[in-house]
Length: 124
Length: 236
Image (cartoon, rainbow over all chains, first blue to last red; front, side):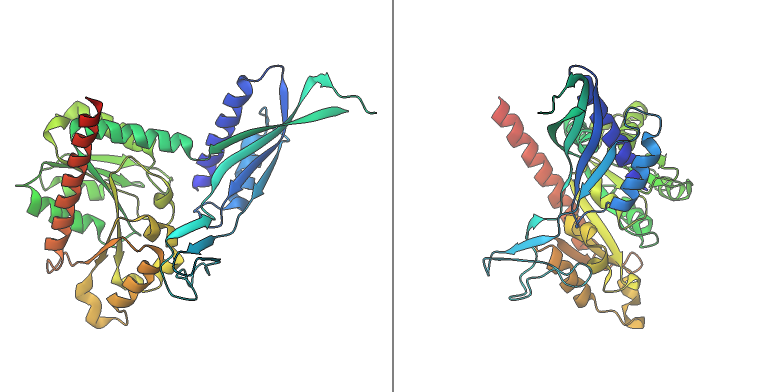
């Protein structure tokens, strides 16, 4: 259940970032990128996020998780391909090993959407 | 109505763990210690391989072990019989060691021993083929173990572990004749994911492959020491 620890780390990162912002920003959405080729389960992250943010400054904030697929690049064929996770990772055309991963290993906090009580926008 | 703002953080989700791992590695470098992180599923033979390694390399290296186990001290007790310091870390319900736990272990180690006198620290991770692969602890190299009884398809099913490994020990090769498993097929599956990993079939019972395993350890210790002296030279 390392998703629980990761969620803790996520909450701390957002808290540290918020502390440096002027005014009292209220976080609406946190955007994560969790690649397909990682040991992290997005469903567990969502669950942990909801459970751990209850009653905190992030209560009610939405966690949005983008899941980029595993895409490898074969240097021999000079082409990208989608490995078949669990079955085949080598290049389907020339069988070269999966050396270069172009996407799928991402584990990052992308951006935060927030509003500030002191800034009122005017509808035109 | 309120206006929504957007701020880019672009921060690694594991940055806290990574930061801790880097400072553990710096500390180990200061002591002149090479650290190897041993990872595998439960029952693949990590502890027995370590026992053999401690036994046969004790005249060559001064070694210590940081032992991650979910609840017991059984493995730590087995290893202590070989006269090396063993720091036991009970991870509770956590399924892997993280850099913070290992930092605690290193802290304890430095209080009980003179770390400058040591050459090698083995971290025996919690038996699990998934999570440990994603959490660096400050090691200089990752060693994965896969026993042949686990089957040829495990590298395909648990790819991150085998992708991350610098060295793969295929253990319990003594049992090969009794199983429908070909070491060659395991190697082929691992190679799909990792073209540079050093693969060594071993048996802690017959000592098959131990010479190669020890040669890999020596080479890794030497490479770390060389890298460190290069870094020192570039600083002066």
